[in-house]
Amino acid sequence: MPNLRIQHEYKELAEEYARHVKVHFNSRLRSICFFGSVARGQATPESDLDALIVADGLPRDIGLRFRETNPIHNSLRQTDAHRKLRSLGRHGTVSDIFLTPEEVSKHPPILLDIADHGVIAFDRYEFLTGILKSVRRRLRELGARKVTSEKGYYWILKPDAKPTEVVEI
Image (cartoon, rainbow, N blue to C red):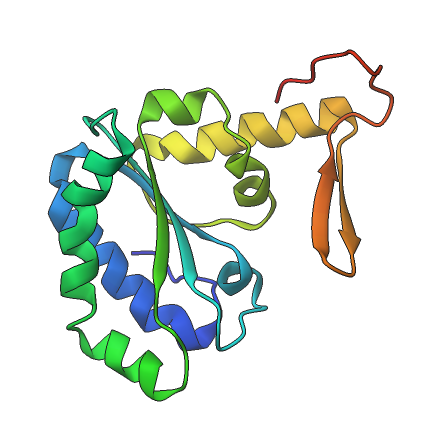
């Protein structure tokens, strides 16, 4: 696993989570990527570890996806990495999104944040790397920019877009 460039308090948990995901999905796994405040180095004690998992053969139904992947969370809560993070006053919760390669190839909006600051922990055949490269290229073509405000941030995808224009990433 590459040296994860994420907030140090969460590094062990992220590595442990990635190991559990790899075991669970085995050859179905395409990519693991961390994003959000932990990846940006801005996590607070209330922050969770955000992760995108790309895997083949996921059920279409979201509820079935949660049912399939719940054992990952159950086993993670039993690890020393989780206990250590909790002892530091951190939540230790992982908020994960499970998508198929086909879903990721359609450039869902979550890829905006991931393209901006995601940290890839595993990437078979550089699948996600290629997708993120195309998202970044498209954002440059559109002249997109990330705007920071008091309450967080938002994206202006195409500053000169017409009111009825559809903007695709």
